[in-house]
Image 1 (cartoon, rainbow, N blue to C red):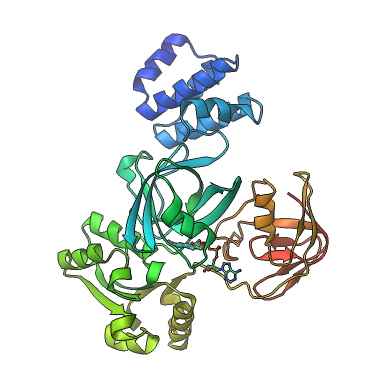
Image 2 (cartoon, rainbow, N blue to C red):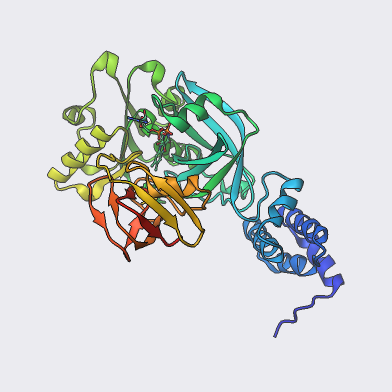
Length: 409
Ligand SMILES: Cc1cc2nc3c(=O)[nH]c(=O)nc-3n(C[C@H](O)[C@H](O)[C@H](O)COP(=O)(O)OP(=O)(O)OC[C@H]3O[C@@H](n4cnc5c(N)ncnc54)[C@H](O)[C@@H]3O)c2cc1C
Ligand code: FES
């Protein structure tokens, strides 16, 4: 049986064997614990006992510090030591905003505690930004390649295209100052490159849909094993083609990577009828498609009608919320918050606006991470008008109040 009390000499020995992040984490936890008048001994012991992975030690300290103190205090202390350290939430610091085209920019983010560098190429992160005193969340594909060697100490990038009248994207591209602290949600999504990759691939991307595929291309390049890849990319014109120089350079470096570019102002819109000419053996390839909704719908129909739906991987950036609901008074029962909502505001947005930490993933009705129980009343799915009654789980990212209701969060 293991003893709970570890001799100090043993702790010192273990301290010598700790990785730098573990030492930092231990010091931070010790400082927080000391500041709170609690003993740091148990924290040190558990960090020393944890495995060698920096992430696990840091996660452990987050949880121990959070449990040692009241719900409000740990972040205050950790924040004093480093604004990226939080016992409650993942954070990141935007260290650079790099223009890509006139309306797109790459944000280089240093993630704080608990962010694992082991995301898969093609996954997305949630990013929360404080604007006008409220936290606003959106999802963005990670455009960088995972850097396992950095062991959680590297950076990630997201690449954002400013949407006309887009609330968050405009701000991220044109208004975000380097140094800004943002909130992060862990990487997720199944639009990913398998490891090892298939022998023959087709990437078909349009506009900002290049971002998850850029992570895949960068990953293949870094590994130095580029399979037989055809990459068709469509953009309005050369100037708006995101990452164009890098993509051309990659195709120059790897003879097995063939780049087909379509600029709408020179070649007309690239519709699916041009696919045969661009990639005659598309039927033999595992295919990843990301771009505007009409392009995705056309690809889905085309592959399905060829009986090849299994070979097609799609990533959507938005859901069409065309239905409307009546709106109503919504009570978030466990949090003790309430709000009067119109019929276009999703329950997810309303909960966040009320200051509740709502669960979410894709924010567009795919992943089901956001499902919470509806205790009373009715909500409507804004994609299709489907109604959900009390005691059903509802996808808060695509539903709105249809009358007064109570949600169990
Ligand atoms: C998995 C995933 C990955 C993504 N990855 C990326 C990425 O890598 N890069 C990227 O740029 N985006 C990406 N997105 C999209 C991103 O999450 C945002 O949806 C996008 O940046 C727009 O956000 P916004 O706040 O600017 O627009 P919003 O303000 O939310 O508006 C969205 C759209 O609706 C329009 N709109 C807004 N208000 C109205 C209105 N009243 N009437 C009519 N139209 C209106 C806007 O013009 C805009 O086109 C991704 C989305 C998902 C789900
Ligand atoms: S957040 Fe993915 S379904 Fe709602």
